[in-house]
Length: 297
Ligand SMILES: NC(=O)c1ccc[n+]([C@@H]2O[C@H](COP(=O)([O-])OP(=O)(O)OC[C@H]3O[C@@H](n4cnc5c(N)ncnc54)[C@H](OP(=O)(O)O)[C@@H]3O)[C@@H](O)[C@H]2O)c1
Image 1 (cartoon, rainbow, N blue to C red):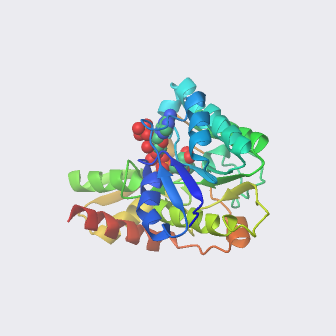
Image 2: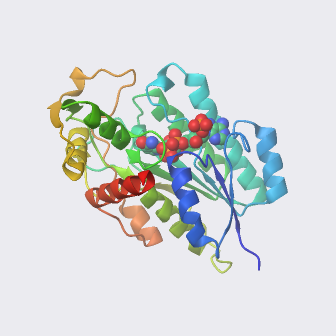
Image 3: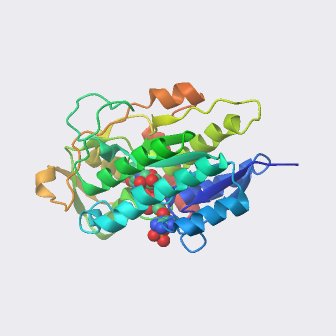
């Protein structure tokens, strides 16, 4: 039986790893090809075009990215090559083979001066280079592949890779007190929830009778807007680690890259168009902590 081929790039990142886990449950629906930098370096256009010719994916889910927000300030060329130029290449390869393209962007395309959740069509104004490189990736994808879905997400964490939750757990085990910024607001996103959303989006699109491709920009995050301090406090409460979390202003924690102070995403569009359910951030944090524990056993 023919199964639509789904190419996933960046398989070892947070989202790529969660997709690999989840793919097992979708194996009756899709034939997945998971790639990493060693099997498909997305910054190499020849490799990418050859790969598409050879495997003819019906969809490409691009989980590969340059995500080191502070380092991007000094590694601009590298960030642009992966987040903008390579996205352009993938989009063109998708367009040339009539594949649907799903790629991810960030809440950091916004400047954070708004006081209500950002909708996908609100004005962008990145305040750091990472945000700029991701914004350029969005534009190039939409320009060069008419079947492009861009999903902006925020504060991604999972049991895999490096993220805020893992950093907090490590610090809370090492120290009795930690300081966390309390004036930057956003929405945490459990990568496992995002992975599920992506595969639920693909399902109707892969149906032969579904001849409309809902291209455009979407937002996806868990439900609820909090500060990093509130996020850290919840990690402490749920794990009961013996550590006190203190709130501090961003001015007391200087970083190489400026962050938007408010980057809460309004995700109504994605829920409505793809009939998805949203999970509350605290519930998803608990799920991730449980998954982390299971991994250690
Ligand atoms: N993490 C967040 O908080 C956050 C927030 C908002 C949006 N997002 C977006 O969400 C998406 C998924 O993020 P994530 O947290 O899963 O990212 P991640 O954990 O940093 O994973 C990115 C993956 O891309 C791979 N990669 C880098 N360069 C590559 C290349 N040239 N060819 C192939 N693979 C390459 C990396 O491999 P190596 O490690 O070997 O380089 C890594 O496995 C990204 O688009 C990101 O920008 C993330």
